[in-house]
Length: 550
Image 1 (tube, rainbow, N blue to C red):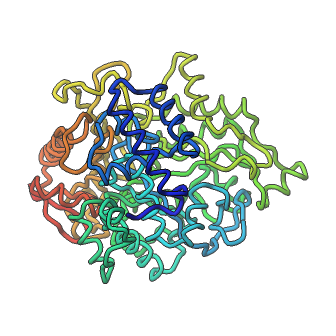
Image 2: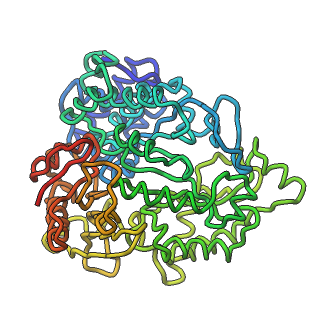
Image 3: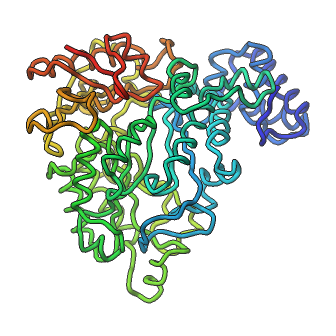
């Protein structure tokens, strides 16, 4: 049997303790919660071990093929890891430097620009020598042994400006990530092997992933607006990229110039449009509290994000500006040239921002996960999102973003009949095109979200221009289709909103909207591992999209 690198020693005692725990649980079916933890503690002490890791029990499960659903659910570590319907796997490229010299970015040697060596994900990357295969394998093994279904993987590639790295490295890096996902983790653990034969090319590895057990259903990269050329966007799509995170930071040119960002709003507007026209989801990184900004100008900027059609991002990462070690901003702070927002000012600003977020936007992060020891000045509140939510509730408000509305563990509407959900349609202008945001919600004041779809009518349908990729000619584009709830293995139909037909209903409605507008073709920006899903509904592979003629 294969054991992870961090599996505790001695192995035989860990397994013996795990067997004792399973036996105790089977003997007393009432064991749960504190009682179960007490048994774990006592039996671990009996075997001269620290409290045993939950994933050790799963190794025993593979050997015995017996584990009650109740115990399996109880043993799952951090349910939130797979509660959005997928398991996110973050990996890092090597440090290739950065084309910009932003004053707020730290520059630690041998670590990708803007990151620190003591961040958990970076530590995992360093431990695996920035090897994509090893990083993905390590993370999937950890998630699998923690009780999560890993069949639907959202690959998140970090490490700075991805577009500034040479194409040969990027293609090989992504290929090795696919190779790792194509392994059957359970079989490898049982067979004591660390990998199976790799494909000869990226396309070959992607072809395997379309039908393998663990599929990459989306790939995210981060880059700069001034690097989003037509050639680059085509390259990203061929890699399998479905979402691009743009470092926008501020909507004020004077602020961007002051912090040496190296681009202005012209580049942001152009990149946003070109990415959406290619069917990609767009996430903005925004940084309130930059030099020369005020809470008033920051709030005005966020209001502009959703009132000006030139922007309208699909997702947001809000990273309040802090002073970190190894940054130029540190000297500005030390000489009195810059002062970050205090916690009270920042919290009030974030509360106001949350009030205006439209229901078609997902706030991925509300604060950057920088270790407090690396922050010299600025907010160190690690649970800032939670604190902001408390203030919102106290003021009688709520956030309507996708993440705050998505159905969650133990939600009272979790088991609601799919037929009783309300289909809501929101139409808005964005980047010279029209967007339709369809979401299935519980018809209550909370608007609990179960599934969503983003349909775009691109500008080239109206202006006579040619799209960037020929397979999109004359087509509307589905840029995202997602059902929330605990991630389930492909084909499973257990107690989760997934696999209840909501995705199919949203597809049908998107086709109806397209046909009603007199358009006879619809394309889907599908992740490589999700292509097989669309085949069931009459879509066919054309280039790097799934396309259907209506």
